[in-house]
Length: 96
Image (cartoon, rainbow, N blue to C red; front, side, top):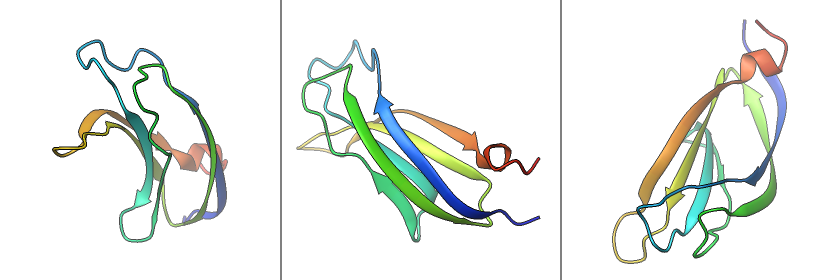
């Protein structure tokens, strides 16, 4: 069964992101697919406990998971992946 609809997501905050990185500059990436359906928060500079309070909407058509990635922005090198998690959106839409 193909999932279709609109998914609303609010990225509220993160806590205790890193004790190893002195100046954590986190941002969050939400991905349904890398071709067209991905969005990101703004970077919060120098905060391991950032408050994003950012809302997103996605058109869902045939997707079953939302990938959430938290990154540490690095101005001189590639951004560092802090963590990631897949959310089963089929259960959110009531399609088990």
